[in-house]
Image: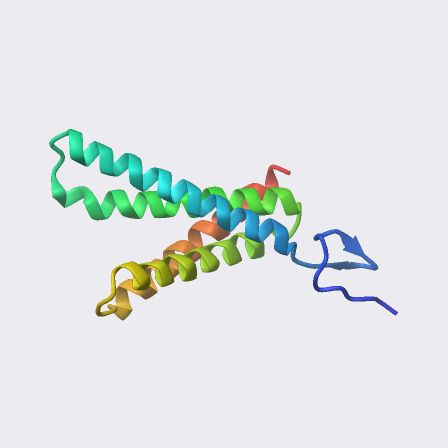
Amino acid sequence: MKVFSHFNDGKNYAGNVSLSFMSVFKGTFISLVVSVLGASIAGLVFYFFSVSEKIIPWISTGVLSISVFIGGVWAAYSASNRGIYHGLIVGILFFIISWLLGLLFFPGTIVLLCSLQKLVLTGMAGALGGIIGVGSS
Protein backbone atom coordinates (compact mmCIF):
# COMPACT_ATOMS: atom_id res chain seq x y z
CA MET A 1 0.00 0.00 0.00
CA LYS A 2 1.38 3.38 -0.97
CA VAL A 3 1.24 6.29 1.39
CA PHE A 4 0.46 9.49 -0.46
CA SER A 5 1.56 12.74 1.05
CA HIS A 6 0.57 15.82 -0.92
CA PHE A 7 2.24 18.31 1.39
CA ASN A 8 5.84 17.25 1.61
CA ASP A 9 9.22 18.58 0.63
CA GLY A 10 9.07 17.14 -2.90
CA LYS A 11 11.07 14.03 -2.07
CA ASN A 12 10.02 10.55 -3.06
CA TYR A 13 8.10 8.90 -0.22
CA ALA A 14 6.76 5.39 -0.90
CA GLY A 15 6.86 5.90 -4.65
CA ASN A 16 5.03 9.22 -4.60
CA VAL A 17 6.63 12.35 -5.96
CA SER A 18 4.58 15.39 -5.17
CA LEU A 19 4.97 19.12 -5.42
CA SER A 20 7.22 21.08 -3.12
CA PHE A 21 5.11 24.03 -2.06
CA MET A 22 8.06 25.72 -0.36
CA SER A 23 9.95 25.68 -3.66
CA VAL A 24 6.92 27.14 -5.44
CA PHE A 25 6.55 29.93 -2.89
CA LYS A 26 10.26 30.76 -3.04
CA GLY A 27 10.16 30.77 -6.83
CA THR A 28 7.13 33.05 -6.83
CA PHE A 29 8.81 35.42 -4.37
CA ILE A 30 11.95 35.50 -6.49
CA SER A 31 9.81 36.22 -9.56
CA LEU A 32 8.18 39.15 -7.81
CA VAL A 33 11.53 40.55 -6.67
CA VAL A 34 13.08 40.22 -10.13
CA SER A 35 9.99 41.83 -11.65
CA VAL A 36 10.18 44.84 -9.33
CA LEU A 37 13.91 45.22 -9.96
CA GLY A 38 13.44 44.87 -13.72
CA ALA A 39 10.60 47.39 -13.78
CA SER A 40 12.67 49.81 -11.70
CA ILE A 41 15.63 49.53 -14.06
CA ALA A 42 13.35 49.96 -17.08
CA GLY A 43 11.77 53.02 -15.44
CA LEU A 44 15.18 54.57 -14.84
CA VAL A 45 16.19 53.92 -18.45
CA PHE A 46 13.00 55.56 -19.72
CA TYR A 47 13.46 58.50 -17.37
CA PHE A 48 17.11 59.29 -18.11
CA PHE A 49 17.31 58.38 -21.79
CA SER A 50 15.17 59.34 -24.73
CA VAL A 51 13.58 56.00 -25.50
CA SER A 52 10.51 55.70 -27.70
CA GLU A 53 7.32 54.99 -25.80
CA LYS A 54 6.41 52.46 -28.46
CA ILE A 55 8.72 49.90 -26.89
CA ILE A 56 7.23 50.13 -23.38
CA PRO A 57 4.87 47.16 -23.95
CA TRP A 58 7.78 45.07 -25.27
CA ILE A 59 9.99 45.96 -22.32
CA SER A 60 7.24 45.19 -19.80
CA THR A 61 6.52 41.86 -21.50
CA GLY A 62 10.23 41.03 -21.40
CA VAL A 63 10.51 41.89 -17.71
CA LEU A 64 7.41 39.83 -16.97
CA SER A 65 8.65 36.81 -18.93
CA ILE A 66 12.20 36.89 -17.60
CA SER A 67 11.12 37.27 -13.98
CA VAL A 68 8.69 34.34 -14.14
CA PHE A 69 11.25 32.25 -16.05
CA ILE A 70 13.83 32.85 -13.29
CA GLY A 71 11.30 31.98 -10.61
CA GLY A 72 10.35 28.79 -12.46
CA VAL A 73 14.01 27.80 -12.76
CA TRP A 74 14.53 28.40 -9.05
CA ALA A 75 11.44 26.43 -8.00
CA ALA A 76 12.19 23.43 -10.18
CA TYR A 77 15.90 23.42 -9.34
CA SER A 78 15.22 23.42 -5.62
CA ALA A 79 12.48 20.78 -5.93
CA SER A 80 14.57 18.58 -8.28
CA ASN A 81 11.47 17.03 -9.85
CA ARG A 82 8.31 17.85 -11.82
CA GLY A 83 9.84 21.00 -13.24
CA ILE A 84 7.02 21.82 -15.60
CA TYR A 85 4.47 21.68 -12.77
CA HIS A 86 6.57 23.72 -10.34
CA GLY A 87 7.28 26.34 -13.00
CA LEU A 88 3.67 26.47 -14.20
CA ILE A 89 2.39 27.00 -10.68
CA VAL A 90 4.97 29.76 -10.14
CA GLY A 91 3.69 31.45 -13.30
CA ILE A 92 0.06 31.17 -12.27
CA LEU A 93 0.73 32.41 -8.72
CA PHE A 94 2.78 35.30 -10.10
CA PHE A 95 -0.08 36.23 -12.41
CA ILE A 96 -2.67 36.09 -9.61
CA ILE A 97 -0.54 38.17 -7.21
CA SER A 98 0.38 40.79 -9.83
CA TRP A 99 -3.22 40.94 -11.07
CA LEU A 100 -4.53 41.50 -7.53
CA LEU A 101 -1.86 44.14 -6.85
CA GLY A 102 -2.77 45.82 -10.12
CA LEU A 103 -6.43 45.91 -9.10
CA LEU A 104 -5.49 47.32 -5.72
CA PHE A 105 -3.24 50.13 -6.99
CA PHE A 106 -4.86 50.79 -10.37
CA PRO A 107 -8.60 50.23 -10.04
CA GLY A 108 -10.52 50.38 -13.26
CA THR A 109 -11.76 48.23 -16.05
CA ILE A 110 -10.17 44.89 -16.79
CA VAL A 111 -9.51 43.82 -20.35
CA LEU A 112 -10.17 40.09 -20.34
CA LEU A 113 -8.15 39.32 -23.48
CA CYS A 114 -5.04 41.09 -22.14
CA SER A 115 -5.38 39.31 -18.81
CA LEU A 116 -5.67 35.93 -20.51
CA GLN A 117 -2.64 36.71 -22.67
CA LYS A 118 -0.59 37.56 -19.59
CA LEU A 119 -1.80 34.39 -17.86
CA VAL A 120 -0.70 32.27 -20.82
CA LEU A 121 2.60 34.16 -21.03
CA THR A 122 3.42 33.72 -17.34
CA GLY A 123 2.36 30.08 -17.43
CA MET A 124 4.55 29.34 -20.44
CA ALA A 125 7.54 31.26 -19.06
CA GLY A 126 7.25 29.48 -15.72
CA ALA A 127 6.86 26.06 -17.32
CA LEU A 128 9.87 26.65 -19.57
CA GLY A 129 11.88 27.81 -16.56
CA GLY A 130 10.76 24.71 -14.69
CA ILE A 131 11.97 22.46 -17.50
CA ILE A 132 15.34 24.19 -17.52
CA GLY A 133 15.55 24.20 -13.73
CA VAL A 134 14.87 20.53 -13.21
CA GLY A 135 17.20 19.68 -16.06
CA SER A 136 20.04 21.54 -14.40
CA SER A 137 19.51 20.03 -10.94
